[in-house]
Length: 222
Image 1 (cartoon, rainbow, N blue to C red):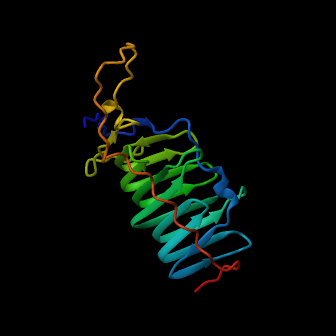
Image 2: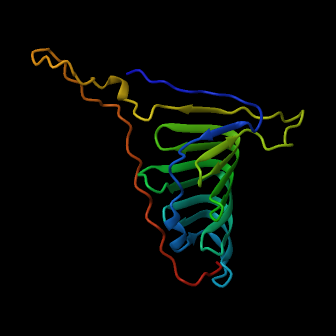
Image 3: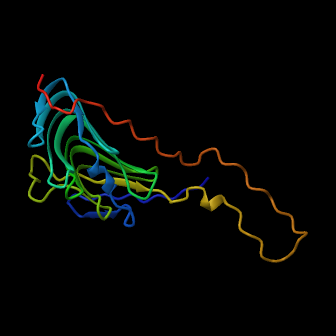
């Protein structure tokens, strides 16, 4: 099977990749409870602010964060904002109107649910479904419009630490489309046709979202 790919490299914050302009973040996530767990830490049920350390997991609807340390807060619209660090931090969230998930990995992730903005710092990887992937030391992903920017934040490049390169790949939406037989519109009923072979390497569907955690309503500090 022949596939095509687009690869790119750039030293500055210049790559603007439209990952999925017609799909937006799952707005229903903000209506779900914020569940969390960790080895130590806690939070306030009154302010919605908390800090956790050690094997931290935070969920809200389809949103899942795993990290070593997280500071978080509940925004006025009940969405979640969090700054997470780890080796690495992992992020996953479903996109509204699709069965696909955004996935990201980095040493630090700053998530703003109110702005639908995800920022990835240091050894960052952003994946959208089975066909799109972007790598850099810094990635900014606007889930509201599906646009990702990658490279180095302005002013961070120095002689000792030059601006990072950006690499990525975009596969065809239908990776098997090139192998599908075309309809015969000639009207020749006796024309031989070779049946298409079954495909064994089709893109696999995204795995189901992890079940949300169940915790007590009152937040407690260990």
